[in-house]
Length: 457
Image (cartoon, rainbow, N blue to C red):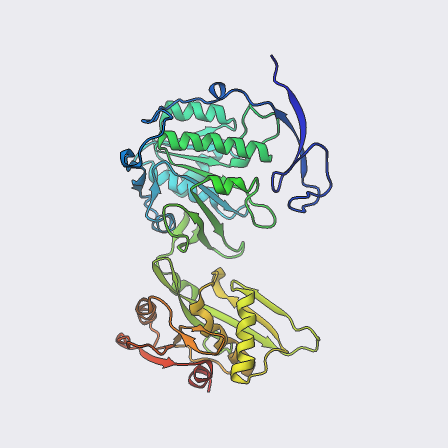
């Protein structure tokens, strides 16, 4: 009997289904987001499930004590910054989604990973957007040529599954998931249904065979990965590749990782020969810092296991508007508002009637409480137009009462400041003093008022 098909209208932003076209989605409130798709009655499970690799349990429940721990095995990509964000390497049987703006370097990064992994085993690079000759041209420029790197120009997930079964690679890269489709759904590639079903098939392959798979995902104008939100829930790891078009530097950030920390970031520099990992991001982020300008301070952060020094810039300007502007880039807008209220209430500096702009230099996202004191000092420094000593690093969380609180891993932060040539570190008062590294002076402050006296005067 022929499959019974009906017409459904599905929101391409959230997956909401409707029997008729709607101008506005009642679920996510997006306008003009419905696309016509044909819904096919599901076949029986025995007809659809293709068990091309049998698992040890054969679909039956298995005691957790009997489960082997092979899935914990990690394979290094030989790219240190990539391994850092993944938590030490690629986990066997993991499904990873890499998103980012068009032209940011997602395909370049994963082609470099494919070339490096080709030295250890077969790698299958599935491209739905470029021809093999185009990929070869890029591979030659990136020095990613390997006899074990195989290119497959294909968009049908069933054919991709067959080729994986034949080749049995150690790694599969899909570029991109929005171009892949399955014959089981009669709708265009990139629609919610196609992305969901194709990702589900690839997830099944990944878990049953133990072959790690990377998916490249397009992003919407709002910065979210295109397709159903379910896609990010299905995968094991979600990485975002970020950077400004005019800047050669890129940041790989983990926003979900079932096998490691999501606080790690990888820093890359785009060159003619490809993306090169930056071993010392602190030095990079501070390379263009001016020493004679007010509103500029250096704070010490911890990203995963790595201490990092970042420049915080603040600009406080007078305004005639009854509603002063508050603009932030790379820092929490609400946190800046709280710090301004603390400055006004606890230090007597009347800053609330001014326009305020705060920026984390280098495109870094600063969301750690240990940066509070640095932002507070930067705001007052700009307001009074008094520069802070350029050899100073500031560490500390600011409470609502104006008190300065400690931050974890203080010694690692101070050692990072010493290694980069800073001569002074301002920290909260500690119960147990920290020994100062050679060439650096540690000053302790108890509240915001004392910190302003020490740093600005």
